[in-house]
Amino acid sequence: MPKLGHAALLLSVSLMLTGCSTSTHSANNTTAPAVAPAPRPSTGCPSPTTTAGRGAAVDYVDFIQANGLSYVVPENLGLPPVKVPAADIGDVQFLVRCALSPLNEQTKVAPPPPRDGDAAFIPEGTPVHAVKGWPTLCRLAAQHHGEWHVYLATDPHSTTAKPQPCAATPTTPPTASDTVGTTQDS
Image 1 (cartoon, rainbow, N blue to C red):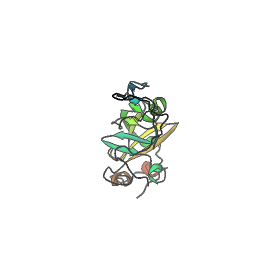
Image 2: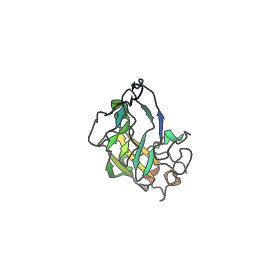
Image 3: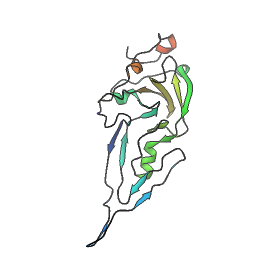
């Protein structure tokens, strides 16, 4: 399982210098690189700033940030995928406010830490749903690329990426619709 640099981020950041910063040196004067605002792709995304001549490429895992927690697809936690039938998709909890991976690709700048409502790959404005039979502090679901994806809340106190105990074990007895077409660790 991947190590967490910061539990809330669940990001694996790979900084790549895209150029050398320039500075002017004289006997008594040193000018630092200019800080310029990077392009902002949407209204829901933060406006990153960049230092001239430097960039970053972030290698994200598929996550959603909500309720002060990071929710990650099981495959990124070394677990089998969790399939959920459309009948088990609950109410909309919120809309994704920023997709951080496209923001990073466009700006070439590492965005600030994720905020509640941000996601790695899910497009801005996509509804994020509860999963019937699961507390929203444990599991969420979103549809992208034509498929439903279940996201498990991760343990923010763990030094390795692992799900919260409640994300792996239902808090209510499963119904027939909870088990048909699903993969769950019991």
